[in-house]
Structure formats: structure tokens, C-alpha cells
Length: 395
Image (cartoon, rainbow, N blue to C red; front, side, top):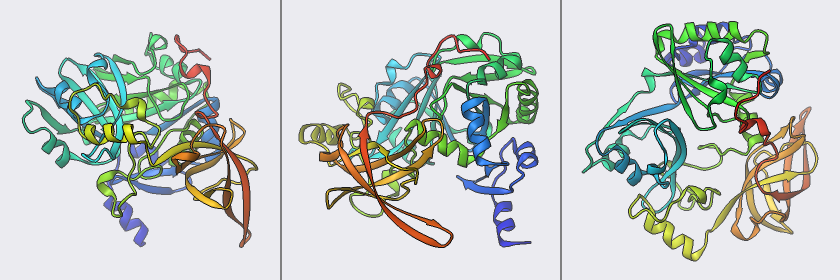
């Protein structure tokens, strides 16, 4: 048995693993928070175009999920995160971030308002200790339900048609960031119009015992709608094209930083719209008020870069001065653009600012260096109307 095989056996399988492993022809795996997940199934480009032209199905089960209930659930979450949780109505989902006392982002994630005094918080990091400390004085229960919920991300222009063909009638009326409940083989099935691809898409949540049955029925229903399982590489390409930030790639969670100055605030990540300074108390509020008054050190920006060489890990210059670095980059096939997410000094973060990216790339053991012109753009270069269209279009 190889060392790689032994490591994979130490990781947890997701509830969909039997079907995932059977479909994974490349046998290319990675570790997602203790779970074994595929980087690809067959071909990354085919999987990417399934997301953009048909339906791509991504196993979302390893995402960290906390269930927060009790009389003080809303008050607790309002103390924990930067946005006003009272504005997330029952049956809705809200994107948010949470900070330490220095106003530095610990993580981002989504809050599902499932019922009165009943929420699910999905995140990148495991932070049960910190969430428990923050709950002192609140009448709440916090349960890590990551292993108790199986989830699939079903993304792409034919995603609604696939799910409707599986029997989820009325799903087309679900608005972005909304939740619908169905019955599937006698058990509850929750569908949210959420995702990480910037396209029309849904996330499907069910108990693990029905995971394989859900997979089989979904793929049977979607056989005429170009449905395909997609791995982490294709999903990563789609999220970069959509301009979505990823913890661990575009920012370091504050609790994980080793060196001073490596964490970022919501304002520095371009997420100031998630900060409600009208709330009286929340983690990091004092520091964020001070930053709002003095100004931020950095900006997270989107760059449109000339050429077709992805600017992975590139330095960013204004003239001869290094002013930042690229955190995520890709040649984006649908947007037909060399796109990057970068962290730059605040003075160079305004849309329209012209910069230069220092790109190194290797072809046939030969390394080349190019200085590519780039411009700061506002928002992503991929933002199709179907992403928000309600009723969702049928194919």
C-alpha cells in the first residue's frame, strides 16, 4: 500500500463517496477539512463547461455546518457576525463574515434561517471553541452537524430543469438566497438557491442515509440536460470567474495567521457592505469604526489582465513599485478573460487604475517572465442574468 493510499484511508468519506469514487476516472483526490474529495472526475475543462452550459454537481458535504437554536439564537448571531441577522427572514439565506476583536476576518459563510430561533451557519473553518466562548451569556445550543447533513451543489443553466425533472415542482419560483422544503423518499429535502459559481444554481441538503439515492435519481433525471459530476478544480475555476473570495486562498482566517499584518478586515476584502455599524455590539465593531474613520490599508480588487497566461501568485506593480499580489487567477473561458483577484495597497484599488502583473510560467521546463498590463475592474466579468432570473429559465 502506497503512502498516498494510506493517507486517503485516514480521511473521512462523504455520504456520496460510493458514487463519487465510481465516477472518478482520474483518481485525483484532495483533502477538504478531513474528507477525501475529487480534484477532477474525467477532464477539468469538460467539468467546467458542464457548470456553464449544462449542470455540474459538486459534493458539498465536507462544508462545516453548525446548527444554532434557542431563544437567543438571533441575538447571539448578531453579536457574532457583522451583518444584521434580524434582516434575514425565515426561509432566507444571508452571506456574512465574522471578525475577531481587532476587526480582522476570521471566516465568511452563509446563515440559513430555517425557522424561528433556528439557524444553520456554514463556514470554511472549524471554530466550535470560539463559537462556544462567544455564546457565554446567551441561551443557545450550538451543534456541529457537519456529519449529519449530506449536500450537493447543483449549478448551471439546466440545474433547475434537472431538479424539476426529479420531481421538485415549483422550484423555478424560488428566488436567489431563498429556501424551499420538499419530501424525498419520505424524508425532508431542503433546497436553497445558493452556490459558489456565479451562475444559476442550487444547493440540496438531505440526511446521509438518502445520499446515494438522491445522487442516483438526480443523475437519472438530468441525463438529457448535460449533467456531470465536477471536482474541486472546475469549481475553483468557476468561482474565480465569478469573483468570489475563498478563505485560505484570498485571505487568511485571522485565527490562523502567524505573522502580524497578514489578516484582513471586511473593508480590505471589499466586503464592507456586510458590515452594519448601526448594530450596537458585535465582534470587532470598535476596530471597524476606527478603520472606517482612518481608512483601510489594503483593497481586494478584480484585475482584467492582458494575454492568456494566468497570473497565479504574481506580484502587482504601479510603475516600478510593488503595490500588491495576486491571490487567485485563471484564464476564464466563458468570460474570455485573463482574470485575477488581488490584494493591493488601498491607494491603487480604484476601478480603472492601470497596473502591471509580473507573471512567471513554465512550458517544457522553460520558465518565462512577462510584465502584463492589467486594469482594476468593478465586480466580476461573468454575471449572467439567469443567476437572478425568477422564475428560473427552463431548458
